[in-house]
Amino acid sequence: MAEAVREELSALAAIFCGPREWEMLSCSETDGAVLKIHTTAEGLVGEAVPLELVFHLPAGYPSCLPGVSVNSEQLTRAQCLTVKEKLLDEAGKLLSEPMVHELVLWVQQNLRLVLSRPETAGSSAKCTLPESTAGDDGLWITLLHLDHMRARTKYVKAVEKWASELRLTGRLMFMGKIILILLQGDRSNIKEYLVLQKTSKVDVDSSGKKCKEKMISVLSETKVQTEHKRFLAFEVKEYSTLEELQKEFETAGLRELFSECVLGLVK
Image (cartoon, rainbow, N blue to C red; front, side, top):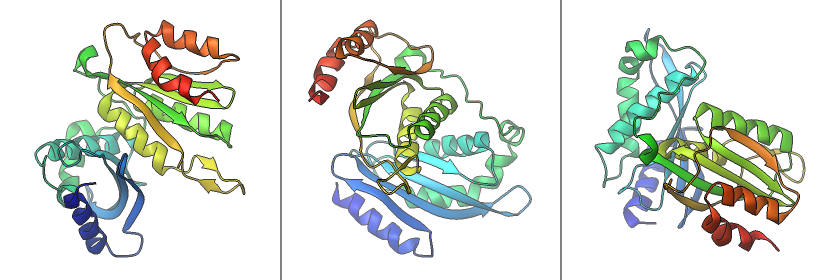
């Protein structure tokens, strides 16, 4: 992790030093850092709107955009997504320099303006994301590996919900002890999915207590190529043999992905 990023994290910890204002969720050289900031901003009628901002600073940050997730009990899902999109627009203006504090200040100063715009003010609680204007060239495909899934029913519902809200297609695949998630969609939405996966209490630990996902790994992330199948939906599928799983990948035009990333998981 770059020294500038370490210094930024240290500065953020000093700035957001109040109770529950700051939380470092994960930090590694390969996956970068994921942090959560609790703050407030002025709403439409002058009320203080509580905001939970989660930032994923990838290994290439700040030369690449951070992943951003916005949540608030007082905002609809669609409003949160609009605020997130505006934050990413601002982040694009700050590339190559530490930006988390600037983004927090921006949302504190501009939330009321964002919420007052017609496309936001009229939003309902049901999230409706705009269609991607980038076409197939903007599609990415990411393969994730989960070590285990104790609270399977709850976990699967969460994965399906996030994929639906973020307009991601693909597969949640079970084959013996192997658990894989194949996501296809807009890259920024895949990044938000990863933030949700790492920061939400979707599973339980060995004692039965709710816990966050700490054993997820990104096996591959690449643009969708012409030979790759476009998935029309997100499906949960079980495979009884390795051959069945391999056929799924080959049908999707992902033969190399299977041989390079999946075969090594078989013990």
